[in-house]
Length: 80
Image 1 (cartoon, rainbow, N blue to C red):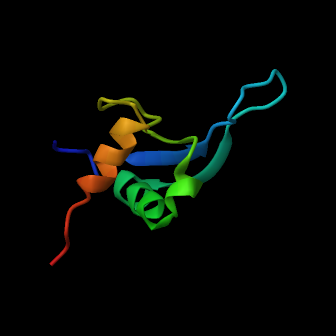
Image 2: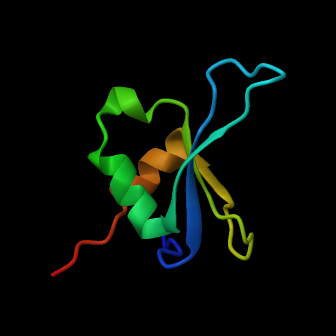
C-alpha cells in the first residue's frame, strides 16, 4: 500500500475504557513516517491503545489503529 508518509500526523493514546472525563492523550505530532517510526521503536505492550491520525483529512484512511497500525509499521520505507 502506498501511504502518504509526508502528511502531518498525530500519535494519540486512547484510554482503555472511555470515561466521561477522560480523553485521548496526544503523544507526538509530525510526519506520518516519523509517527510510524516512533510506534515501531516501542515495545509491543506499549503500543496498546495507540492510533495515528491524519488531522487534515486530505488522504484516506484518516486513522490507523490495531491492524491498520501494524500494517503501516510493516510498510515503513527502507532508506538506502
